[in-house]
Image (cartoon, rainbow, N blue to C red):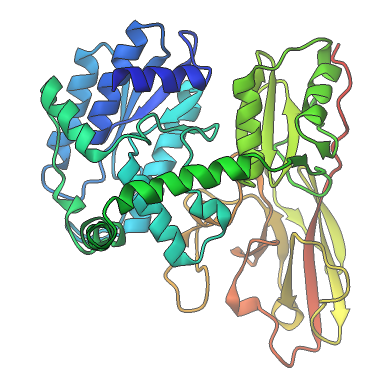
Length: 457
C-alpha cells in the first residue's frame, strides 16, 4: 500500500520541495492515506498538511476532530480543522443535506490548499468509490467524462488509493493497527451514495460477480481513451479570467505545442515537466471552469473552459468598490471588462446576437429604479429559481461554473439595493421578461482581450 502511494506521488511529479493537503475525515480510507503519506515523506515524498472538517452532524463529531488533530500533531504534521460555523451544512443531526455537506467539505479543502500553497489535494477515494461515482453519473445521464469517473490525478486532486479496494484498506488498517472512526452516517439510507453502496452495487455484484471491479476498470479504460484524443487550446477572447497586468493568453491551437511556445516566449528556453503538462491536459479535457497549474517557478497557468492564460503568480480577483451606475440603454466599465444594457423593442432579444455572458430582463420591472453594478457582498443570499430556498450567492456562483478565483469580482446587477442578476449566470425570476413583455433589456458582459505572450523584462 505504501509503495502504491509513493509511486502515485512520483508519477504526479511531487517531491520533497512540494506540499500536499491531505483530506482526513478519520475514517479507514483517509487514515490509510495519511499513514502512507507519512511513510512516503520519509522516502523523499512531499510535505503533508492535514485538513479535517468537523461537519457537526453527530454527537461524536468533536471527538473525531480532536482525534485527527492529535494524530496529525503526534506525527509532526501541521493541521487545519474547520468548524461548522465557518462551513455550515444545514439540516439536523442524522439528516443533513448530502450535496450541502459535499460542497462545504470541498470549499474548506480548497480554502486550506490555497492558503498553504499546496501543489495538490490528496483524498482517500478507493476503487469502490469509483464504481459508486460511475453508477451515480450514469443515473444522472452523464456523458463520457462522467462515465470515466474520478481521475487518479486531475491536476488539483490526487487520489493515490483509487485502484485500491475497501477490502485492502481494511487489511491495511488491521495490519497497522490504525485507530479509525466508523461514521454511522455512512450507513444511513438517507444518502443516495449509501444506497448505491449498500443496495445497488451488492445486488449488481451478485448478478455479475466482480461487477464493482469491472465498473472501476471500465472508467479507467474510458479515461485512457479520452486522454488519447487530440487536444486543442481554445481562444481566451471573450472569457473572464483572473485579473493581472502581466497576464498573457496562450494562442488558439494544438496542445501542447501552443502552450510550450507561449511559455518560452515569456523568457527563453523554459523547460516544462511532464507533470504540469499533464495537469493542463486534464484540465482541458475536463473543460474545467477554473484551475491553476504551476508550470515553472515563475509561470502559472489558469485553465478555464478550454482556454489557457499565463501569469507570473497565482492571483485572486478582489472585491471592487464603489458601485458603478448602469444606464439603460448604455454601458458601464467594470474591472476586466464592461457590462452592456441593450434595449430591445418587441420582446425577447434572442436572435439579436446577445453575448454568451448575457441575461434578459423585463424593462418594465426596471423603470424608475436605481441600477448599479457591484461585486458580490459577503454572505449575500439570493433565490436560485422560483420556489427554491434562499442560497448563498458565492456558492451559487461556484455551482454554476464561476471559478472561486474570479467570483469575488464578478459583476452583480443591483436594483434598489438588492441583487437581481449576474449576467449569464443567474437572474432573479421576478425580473424575467413576461410572455407579453413589449420591451426587454438584454444585459451582457464583454471581457477585455488578453494579449499573447511577449518576453518579460
